[in-house]
Image (cartoon, protein in one colour):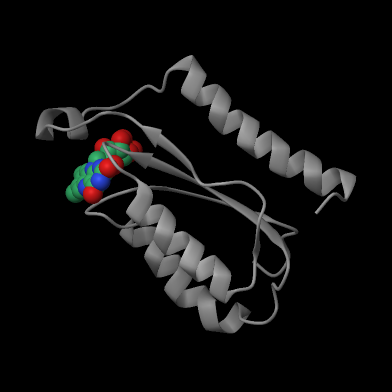
Length: 117
Ligand SMILES: Cc1cc2nc3c(=O)[nH]c(=O)nc-3n(C[C@H](O)[C@H](O)[C@H](O)COP(=O)(O)O)c2cc1C
């Protein structure tokens, strides 16, 4: 975290929350990194079956505490997985969704490389 110039946080939304693994990552890093990341750019992408906004809200709240700078609105990719069978099945994103994810990563990387942020 300390060595990075910017951050792209990516998680599924499970039970109206970010993944447990990502939460554990934030739990472990939050206080050791507090006041050492101020102003660095970040964006977030969420894979969701139907919503995604709760996980996005949680990430924004943590990033705000870290004083990170949001450089794009959270990108929510809806896989429309609703039933247990659909949720447990492997998923392939549409080319359009993949392009949106690539676009967000490219925009963040390009902005960093050009010193825009
Ligand atoms: C335990 C569990 C809880 C879930 N809860 C939500 C939820 O609250 N909101 C939502 O939009 N999708 C929910 N989903 C659906 C996932 O977000 C969906 O499967 C999405 O595609 C996640 O990425 P994955 O395909 O890599 O699992 C849940 C999935 C699981 C397994």
